[in-house]
Length: 87
Image (cartoon, rainbow, N blue to C red; front, side, top):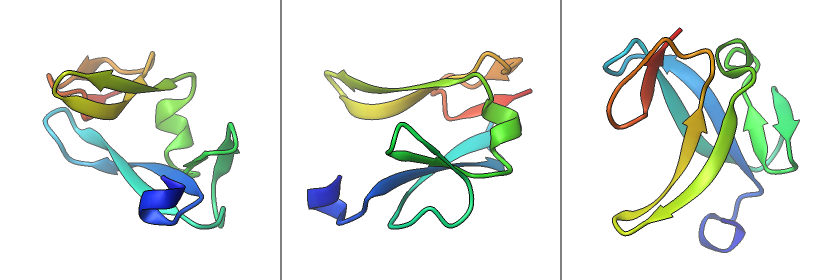
């Protein structure tokens, strides 16, 4: 991440939209302006904290590619691709 994007952190927020009502939004950040720093790499947006509390984030590598996967215990519904959810 640091070599390719020249950024220090991954920023996770939640936005309305997607198949199930909310979607995870990923970005890169240089600083921790607002939010909570988790494991020295993920900056969790203050508003997203309510929606993803208790979740785990895993880096998954599969034959088709690699991605960040959120396992959210608060999710009542989730789309097939795992990018949107409902609480």
